[in-house]
Image (cartoon, rainbow, N blue to C red; front, side, top):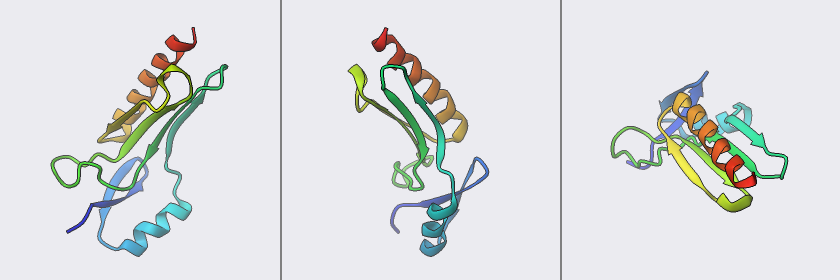
Length: 101
């Protein structure tokens, strides 16, 4: 069965069966939901993963936010939708800002 592979239709994830179609989408698709670089150089990045990180056990987890640098380096949260990822990105930026003062 394998891990579900998804592409984006706008901001909507769509399950695809064809691995070639899925792979080609990574060449042309903008997978970035948001990116914020704070004045101290800490970076918060939120992206569409393209693979179900829930491994078929419930609603697909397809988006991820990470913090790079600072006191929350390697902080990570994952989400099931573009909208939840946008909100999670904002929360991660606020978390990173608290650390940088």
